[in-house]
Amino acid sequence: MAKGEWARYWQHDGLPGIDLLRAHYVRHTFPRHSHEGYVFATITGGIEDVGLPDGVVHAGPGTVVMINPEVPHTARAGGPEGWMYSTLYPSSQVVADIAAETTTIRGTPGFAETDVVDHQAARLIREVHRAAEEGNALAADSMLRIMVSRMLRTYGSALPPRELRTAGARDAARARAVLEERMTDPPTLQALASELGTSPFALLRAFRDSYGMPPHTWLTDARVRRARRLLDAGIAPAEAAVAVGFTDQPHLNRHFARIVGVPPGAYQRGRGLDGAR
Image 1 (tube, rainbow, N blue to C red):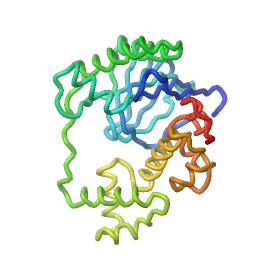
Image 2: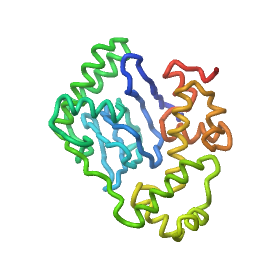
Image 3: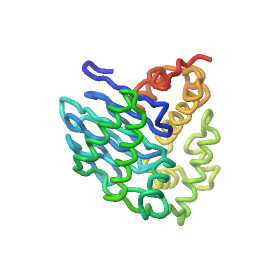
């Protein structure tokens, strides 16, 4: 990390299905990626520029950023001082359970707004972190549920179902399935398009329209996701790198740190793992 930067990405045993990140980034930039679950982040200092499909959000102190599952986005500093934030990454199941218990939302819950100035929610996010760091799982879990319920009741609604209506969307879904299956030895764009009976540029456009990023960017993100699951299982980073198709551990380290915000070793330590079996 650059001078002055720090980050802690971790899990608390008493908060299953939740990842926590507190960090100060200055030069670090997150490339386009997405999450399987939700993002709730509050800025505690500086400005974060979040690049989303419909534009850039300039988030400052007191702002809560909410990102739905599988929404592609980038992040970088909005000023020379960088940004500090506290972030919660609850799984889709955690949010769905809270929505079912505390709201009338039916279907997949989500948020039409990406950034809101909500000082109470921002305080709750910070307090979840504080309680977890103090080992108070009861308080952390309680405040997490209060915060998520508040955001769902105030800003939430049911997300529209994703339908594959066009031939391009169907080709993009088929291409994604091929890349997932052959992650360690993916085809070229030309070969993939030929296999699917389309042209390279048509497939490229369809894939970007469906997933918000070109196939090679999506594949890197998918490899990091799979590597995270292997690291969670205690697999050493060097083994995980090869298993997901990176050339070696340094390649995993670089992409993992850019997308997750910490390198694989720090990620495992945040889960009480040392990468050795």
